[in-house]
Length: 302
Image 1 (cartoon, rainbow, N blue to C red):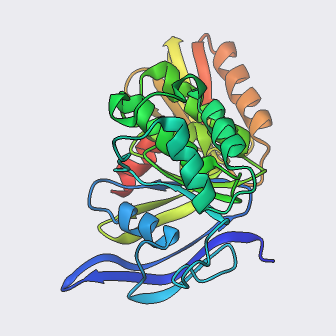
Image 2 (cartoon, rainbow, N blue to C red):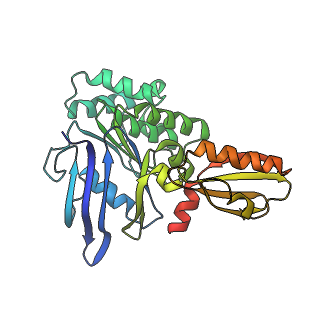
Image 3 (spheres, helix red, strand yellow):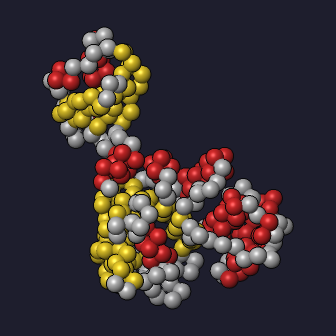
């Protein structure tokens, strides 16, 4: 068994003359929460659909849970998926619908699986509610519940918190965090702050091509950069570059000091030296944060 849950190599998808995904390669480790990032039209949904087996690549090699997703039935029991535009059929009670889907999936105890999945997304009270009576948020969580039934080793979630109120979105994020290490989760979202909180690694797509892929630390520069919010005092960046391991120091605006350091240096030691120097120079600070925001990195790339 491979250590990779998903591996894409040179994947291209064409729709007639239009190239939606062009030569994309990246891999998703087992047990990770992996982000799929990009603006509208970047190829996220097409890539997501190929991972689910909804679409087949025009070129390249795609392996999902050690199988070719284009093989009929290959992903059954291995993958749970929440499409972005999932629509529930009307005329069903929520519990009956999920139980029916669990039977189609061949789960041993369909009703128990349905109840457990609904409970996981905080919607067990909706067991007898008609699907057409669900709010947008409740329908979204019901669709997510079907992706979780049977605890598949790989779960693919397209915009899982879009349209949810903050309390329910936080609950969904906690569900994803709880799966980390036990299941592999791929999350496609426009909410970059959410992805930075959830994901171990991510791929950034733009206009159908891969802009960058890597661990969240690599994408945000946590291993080699930190920011200091200045409250008052005068910062002299050239003085800071004389400190051990500091390679660059500059001000962003009037109150943010950005410090970069050598990749082999221990971050806590460099941060301590810089902060000590600032305090000795009469500079007061409000806080220190490692790396840049994921949003900053994405905007820089795109």
